[in-house]
Image (cartoon, rainbow, N blue to C red; front, side, top):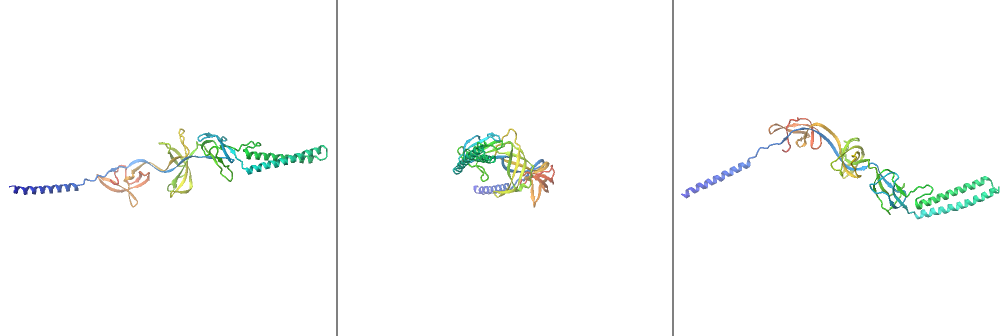
Length: 360
């Protein structure tokens, strides 16, 4: 009996395993229908802009130089201090050149000898004139000669004093006092007490004592890529964001575009300058990094789509429009400006259409 039943159950088990295998393979081969996501066009504002990187600097920044060579004996200002034109910045102690000093001393001695000789000649001429031995013209000539020798001696003394002290008793000018040439704020003091400085002249730029600038008149200085420079012009509006001031922007006006580009890191850059108008409650420090958004083109209340639904075929832009549930057809469109996320649609679809998302 067992021998008869056992083959039956074995065959039944084999059929069961076979059936389960077929069911598993059928389940694995079943794919759910693909549901494509769609979205609708919308009406919005699109602004096309470019970004220039740079910094905020004073429009008028002046380097204060020394007019004499010597050693800094006293500094009268510190960075951040407001000064007016003529205010003292520093004092310079003159260290005279020994050759120049020796020549000046020799000149004083020479003119003193000439002056003494002229004085003796004048005394003799006046004595002879009193005795009616010489004429009036001869006495006048002696007096003129004495006056000339006296002037030469005074000039030699003044020159010696200038070389030694930087002070002329005849003019009262103090060349050892370095003063501000403009009104503004002291941005930096570039020397220290005891440091040697060189005078500014036609052959030498001289040592910079400090920088003074008008902090109420600031500008943005930056660079723009050559691919964008043809789209901008003087007078365009800018939105300037300062790195040190978060969540605020300041209006500006483009004032200058360099006619010559410079190669920086393999790309040609053009320098630009723009006036910035900070709020009264904001103090922008010189040299602060900043970015400027330059509006190249603006479109208000236009039909637009996300660029993620736009496709191209041999340069022709098109979208896939839903004609029935989950059925789409290609429709060519004419596009306008784009801000990189949204793009203007000039023709081809309406605001009521549903568009297939690319890759969905």
